[in-house]
Figure (spheres, rainbow, N blue to C red):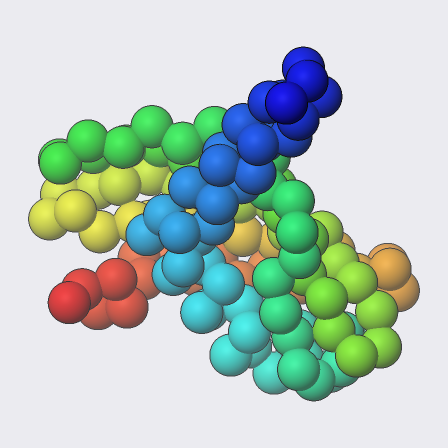
Length: 119
């Protein structure tokens, strides 16, 4: 395996880890349930391939600054996410914006995502 292969594998692992994080899972759940997003992108709405940004998470706190893509039947969109993990281990979405190719920006950040990330 060459340098390219090792780099590609590292990138895949990084994307996979970010996609499986609690903050991403909750954000995607919130976004795909939003009727405005479904109307803009077309059903079904799904997560795209790449995720970029930073995620720092501890038991009692954390921060996330991520950008990722969504695919719908009509168009694609870019999502910008800024979140903080607050008391009780709950993620508060300070910024959760979906910007579609149609130019509309839809905000899905309405405070604390209560109960969505709990098992």
